[in-house]
Length: 398
Image 1 (cartoon, rainbow, N blue to C red):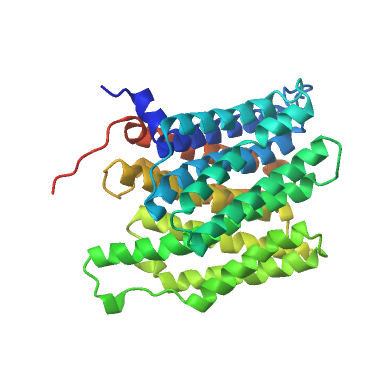
Image 2: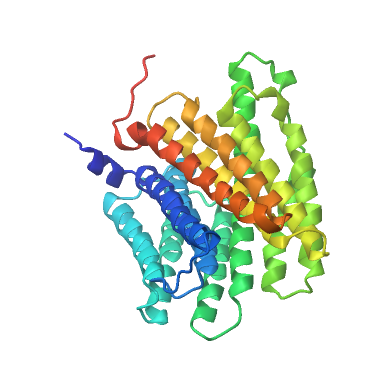
């Protein structure tokens, strides 16, 4: 008889989406504790990690949490794209262990050689990329092969962070931004596929005629993704700061406009769909805000958090929960707690943006409230979907 642990270790979406949820809660609890101590007038004089706490926080959300979500997504989706066999259990467990080793290496980096920390933390995405490439060989469609380039961009951002930690280059700030913006590019491409597709399918099931279904605007889709792709590339090329800023403004505007063609107002009763639309909207808004900050209009930190919380957090939560429900045979209807989690993430993004515009006594309480909303959202996700993540597949009749 298959146990819960065996199930979790067998299928990549189970182990990685569980790890992502747990790490989302853990990493923010650590950050909240540090902020709370300082807000109360205390001081944390020593941490187990070598980086400053705010850099540990940024790194682990971009390259820790998001990497787990990427692992679960690609190892689950690519076999469906190509008709190839799912990754063997041994590979799934090995790569999950390597991901965890990276997290532990970063956590104990204060006592470990920086080269060892870098080697452990940088090992996961190349292994994932090689496995994805081997599966894509069976059906190497350009639109799918492109994701290998996106993974390489995320990895390059992490490499730039470690180069500074190794004392070899001053590339940490750029690396964090390249990593985050590469994730945003992946969301723009993937979300641009699944959001309108899932919306159309849902409306079809509801009895809408083919002629009344929303249609994507292909030229706008291509323009949005191309412009968003150029933003991290412009940072890597060390172009003048106003160039990536301008690209982000135009690309983010195109991103928001393309959503209007997907029928967002027609699915407001279905949280599992509006969560995708909301995450894609946060992506566009965050890019515009980040671009404006490059021209001295608004806070860059606030804009980065709209992208990190609203776009990356919101979209990964939406995609993970949908995948868990679908792959375990459950109806594609978000449980109430998960639907609440979608809303909490969006609220957290808005609150974090608001906090950066305030000074004085309101700042720290709003920041702490933002973290509490994130922790609550992923706790609800874990509690609500634990039976699906650890339990047997449900066989639906008919």
